[in-house]
Amino acid sequence: MTNAPDPALLAKAETLTEALPYLQRYAGATFVVKYGGHAMGDPELARDFAEDVVLLKAVGINPIVVHGGGPQIGAMLKRLGVES
Image 1 (cartoon, helix red, strand yellow):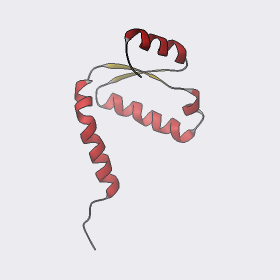
Image 2 (cartoon, rainbow, N blue to C red; image 1 turned 90 degrees about the vertical axis):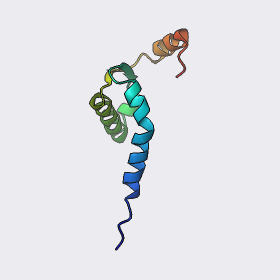
Image 3 (cartoon, rainbow, N blue to C red; image 1 turned 180 degrees about the vertical axis):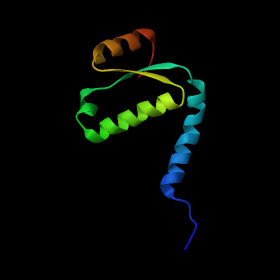
């Protein structure tokens, strides 16, 4: 019997360590997140999306979820010089 760490837990810890500077930088910010039809049609993607939105809120980021508007969002990002 070994006390080897669980690889899944190590992977999660690594992800959180990499994300921490961004979480700190954007704490209190508002993000607009587009939720498209492809993700809505796949139960696993829908669940993952919901978990991600909950995580954003839990770390102090204010997500606003919109559906559709892809071309308009893309045009505005281009106009603002934001790469997506």
